[in-house]
Amino acid sequence: MKIDKIQTFIARVPLGQQQFYSSQCAFPERKSLLVSVETDSGITGWGEGGQYGPAEPVASCVEQVFAPRLKDRDPIEREVIWHELYSATRDFGQKGAYIEAMSALDIALWDIAGQALGEPVGRLLGGCFRSSIPAYATGCYYRGREYLDGNLKEVAAEAHSYREGGFRMLKMKIGLLEVARDLERVAAVREAVGPDYALLVDANHAYNAATACRVARSLERYGVRWFEEPVPPEDRDGYRAVRRAAAVPVAGGECEYTRYGFRELIAGGCVDIAQPDLCVAGGFSEWLKIAALAQSFGVWVIPHVWGSGVALAAALHALAALPPFPHTANPIPLQNEPVIEFDRNPNPLRDQLLEEPIAIASGRIGVPQAPGLGIRINPSVLRQYATPYQVAAC
Ligand code: CA
Image 1 (cartoon, protein in one colour):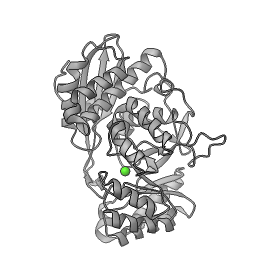
Image 2 (tube, rainbow, N blue to C red; image 1 turned 45 degrees about the vertical axis):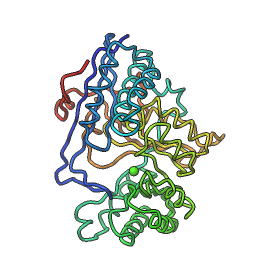
Image 3 (tube, rainbow, N blue to C red; image 1 turned 90 degrees about the horizontal axis):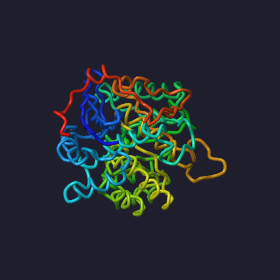
Image 4 (cartoon, protein in one colour; image 1 turned 180 degrees about the vertical axis):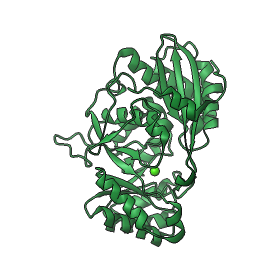
């Protein structure tokens, strides 16, 4: 089997009045960079990358730098290919667009390998500890009206709706407003979901270390299960300070890349929970190294998930094959068993792009059982939202 053709697609869906905000940016649209890798055997693999910034530079890395190297290569040799692509771009591409491009390609190669062997990716990763994953709702972003007038009824109602909808865990946003106002927000959500509900808080690196330490001590009062990205990703000392400041576990890593970046976060004692994104940090091949590294340091690894149904499917397979933390005789949901991030903001690329959309039932999402990623792209939806970046380079 040989790689025959690689294409990138930039899918965009404007959100109009549904625009929402984190502490760092507005989301006027949803977008995904999708990559297809076609083989001469008729198997096509799909991957996704470029989760945060503009998709075009990542598409360019795929099309102009990596695709010519992959023409006629054996897609089964994904580890060999990963090292070759990384070493070819090491001098200028250790983080950012190049690694996101490699992530998309690596996910597609694992999809191909699974289809060729007739096995779901989760089984290729070593086997599945579970066939479904408890989902946590990622929501309670800032909406326009609340931001303007400080009305907390909407965010409270949204939080309550997740609990009513079967989610047992919710991640909310802070960091856009003054600390006092954001803590009022946390209080409103805590009251809406009840005292024992699993609540996570994400600042998207809005704070300096001193402010983040103050926030962390306040979050203790609200029984927060983890404080995500309290400080900028480069501020390793800041991460350590937040961990020392309060008993709230610290999570981070969605802006980090490869085993080398995570080595600093994990071995440096920066996080309790490492959060590589499969579509950012280096694909399945790199996920395996990061997960092993984390385990060896007693750090939990829970992937960051954002994007289309392709990204979601990839995370489901990775989580199916992740051991309980620790591997105990009686793993307890939400305590030793991993959870999957399920973004609840509007995104047709998550809900419509797959022929069989990934759905939640009783708070859990089933791991696709068909070979490879176990997904089929709906061609008409792809045409509706996406355009090929340019003529395929190979
Ligand atoms: Ca986050």
